[in-house]
Amino acid sequence: VDCIAVLDFGSQTCQLISRRIREQGVYSLVLPGDEEIPSHLVPGLKGIIFSGSPFSVSEAGSPEPHDSVYAHGLPILGICYGMHRISKHFGGTVRTAERREYGRSRIRIKQTAPLLSGVEDGFLSWMSHGDSVEEMPAGFSCIAESEHGIPAVIRNRERDIYGIQFHPEVSHCEYGLHMLRNFAVDVCAAGQQWKMETYIEDASADIRKTAGKEAVLLLISGGVDSTVVAALLLHALPPEQVHLLYIDTGLMRRNETEEVTATLKRLGAKQLYIADAASRFLPALSGISDPEEKRRIIGDMFITVQEEEIRKRNIGDALLAQGTLYTDMIESGRGIGTRADVIKSHHNVRSPLVEEKRKKGRIIEPLSLLYKDEVRELGRLLGVHDSVVSRHPFPGPGLGVRILGEVTEEKCTVLQQADDIFIRELRTRRLYDEIWQAFCVLLPVRSVGVVGDSRGYTYVLALRAVLSSDGMTADVYPFLMNDLLEISSKITNRVAQIGRVVYDITSKPPGTIEWE
Ligand code: XMP
Image 1 (spheres, protein in one colour):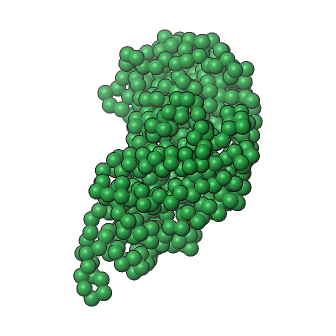
Image 2 (tube, rainbow, N blue to C red):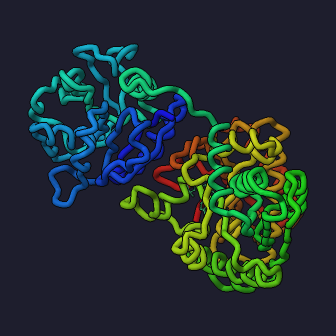
Image 3 (tube, rainbow, N blue to C red):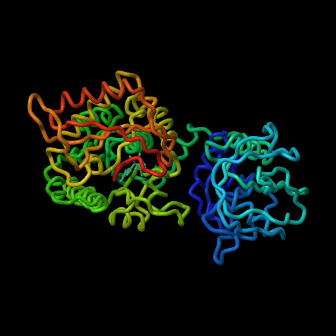
């Protein structure tokens, strides 16, 4: 199929660019920025996008595309840093400003071009840069300018090479998708041949090829991602080959184990092992309140229990399948954009066992190029029930990172009860599907309240509800005050240990979605 390659120079948005192109029905993938394009991809290649970067082109060691990339003679679109690379390559100069320009900027179109076809003059773009093009490279014209007069779009007069200063891939950039579509479909003439059905068949073929007749083991968390991987494995392989292990850590949502079992059976699972390990996790967490320490303990205990179960089931040599998403990869600093910062150690990416399996090439991660909503679409197509597919994401360490400070069994029960009320209320109020992720957080503080006729010293609970499309950024869900008031009183009435409820009104950034 026709393909647009996104060359990765370390920007956090490489996969987002690629995914935006796929949204136009054009196949796209991310490749290392400084290497040659692999020869098997060249026949279908229709165009190349240079990503942004945390580097400045004037810095020593800043990544550069391989010379052969220009020699393909294909259309090129440079975004931000990518634009500066193009400018330097063709003999222009790039200026480093003292202060970064960050946020919205209106763009004045000076000259039309296929890239800007249908784009309205004065559209709002989204900028995040310190550098800008100073002297035009030979053969290029500036066809659009920012409100501060810096070149916003440049175009080579002979070849289809464009540079844009702003980020068309972010959702706040007006006409961003439109410009990416113009580039892929009109400038590159790439066919719109990509659909999720194709992905299912490609991913299934890959799984069959990697697995052969070997056993494949998948740890089930109960969330959308691992359930969809299970569905994909069961689609690709005979059910006898697919071993599903669910570890009940005691840090799960209420009734989770029963629901997970039912879902997997419906998907045709035959080798399903449910390990009740709450009595292992909770003591291990006793006295521990540091979030990364808790994550590490939970991750290690997962591996320990997993190894014991594997030994018991005699599937030690199995390949390990994982529901790792692209966002998990970059937030753990392991993305293709290898320079992306480490934000959190997601246990499903960073455990020694996983690393070891990875080194040996014994890992299958069929979702690692997808974003959450793409995974949902995939799940629906694979017949995963809508109530599971539309389920809000749930972190691997579970309630362990939603009970701030030390985790105890009592706090788990309190949080499970409160969370269950919150989620049920969102469902009955028909708000659940509008919200990307909602949950309760149990705070490590107590406050004074009136319980019955006496004063009590009870827990404080925070409600969190956010809107997002991929978890990378998030806005606070704007509840009607009445909903919040009613939900709050339901919780305090029914969960005696909670005497106060607060609503978290922090977006991401600067906050993260989870509190720990
Ligand atoms: P943050 O809190 O980083 O969350 O804004 C982004 C998304 O990732 C989920 N998350 C995790 N998932 N292991 C996981 O499997 C983790 O350690 C973890 N931490 C956060 C979070 O629920 C949100 O959907």
